[in-house]
Image (cartoon, rainbow, N blue to C red; front, side, top):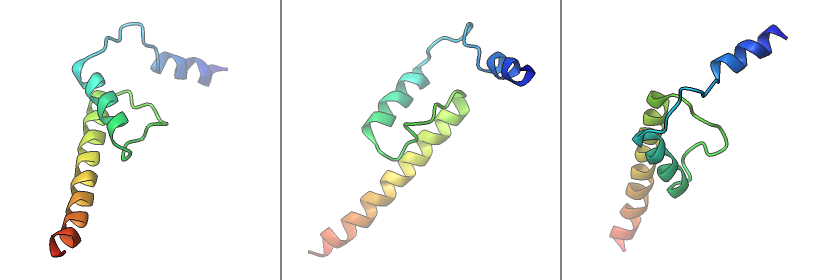
Length: 72
């Protein structure tokens, strides 16, 4: 029972306000499939790293696709 209370205290959102990074993360998550859409990311730094990872993945995919298309 004590573990449940501490987990609730950690995830308490009473003082939380939406920020630009939250809206950016939601928009980027819905526009790309390289993001964890099933797991909520709560920290701002983690959201920024997830967006950076998705940008790297999308850039890699675009480069891998553009190479054979350029050969044609």
